[in-house]
Image (cartoon, rainbow over all chains, first blue to last red; front, side, top):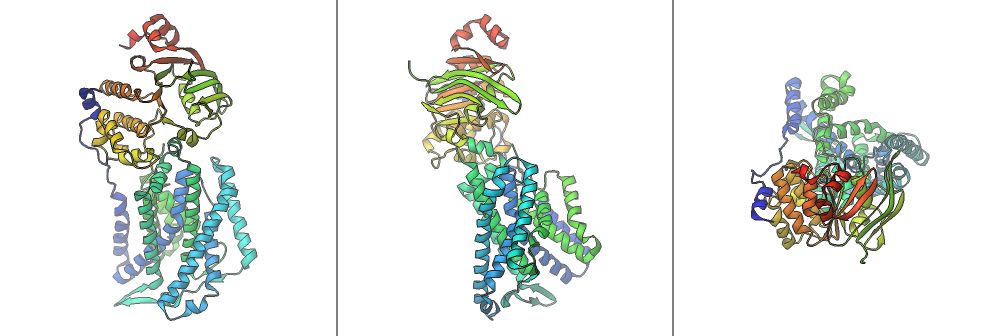
Length: 341
Length: 240
């Protein structure tokens, strides 16, 4: 190739840069600012904001896997709630015999019990996810209507199985001693468990960002979410990747189920399906397939729910839907849409 | 006579209710460039996608390097040594140029000497190495799609209309790049730009209505204006 031609193909323009889209990041700040003005009392506002952050992190942990599952294979999984419920029940089963550790007046013993329960719930839900993908999802790849029907059916069967195994009554999930109550600073009270939930949510978010941006698997997932066919044409088996992501997403839902059950302190087998409405709103707001968007969407939905519950309890139930409608009118593909083929 | 690198014998492909490939037979010899020509809707892109396993053939035999590939999944076909540059280019917009190329190098990090070779005919790839692919121009995206296909040596590269929508200056650059590429590998090129195809192709197959209607040496077709008019509806002169 001649130098002349090389120069021509080189297009000596300025190096193109990705447009940093910071506007969505300003939304939670603006929402918090508006709530501050409406609430008026700084301590109440701060308590509500922290509660919102904790709730948002828990929803993010639950929703992050679902958004990747949809992004990678266009699979709409209404059965995701089953993994949340299984996580909660597994944690309850583990924490039962560990009551002395849960009730001990020692942070380390409490953490050990909680970590073991979370580990069992995470891996248990992940294993269930593998089976669910094989039995329920695989026969209906590419068939959205059948996916909706069969995954909803899977959720109903899972819930009924949990009722049959554990009984249909409401279950209690006591917080470990060290995470009961609040840390009081002046007029402010920070609930300890909410601080823990925020910490776990941040760790999950950072781990996902590192995996997606710094590893080859992450590169494949990001490419697959955008164009799975081209990833296959490059020689990678997207189905295997999808199975891995599905299991990881189910495992995270299991972990989220533990946190959500501890947050509410009581639950039934419907714990998953109850939270799924919020989860779907979050992944739609964030942009299907976008982990960053899912994180932001979870925080926004939780803020809206907490602030409106205080300011206007009558519209609290509809607030998330109103938020979704407003965001989709502004950005129909969500806050951070993933470029699809 | 040496066995061709790729051969299609009586290949039929259905997409939904449509019968697109209706008994396609042609061969791609090892080395050089074979060009698949034909008007819009003749079935050229479907032929490439069928070779790549992206559409499953409903009948016929596809052989690559002596092995039947007709029933294989796309990743296995790619791993057998076929690279694909689709018409849409299909670069990963959210990934940087570096990430796009790194992903295409299946056996590990890209070889620096190989990258330098690619940069020698696509210097824009070096310049925009850390830029997201989504912000590149159309020509740069095409360069990236081709770079991705050649970052590791493959036995056959399928390229679907690389000049589509590109400025003449960029197309001239592409001609130089393909001349370099066909020295080391075999290329099956789908193209509507006959001037571009004639300047590069060694062999040609012409498709119409899902069938091959002519196959032979490109030089013979380029020199025969009457045949061009009969097969393609236009002569080479009309493209100048």
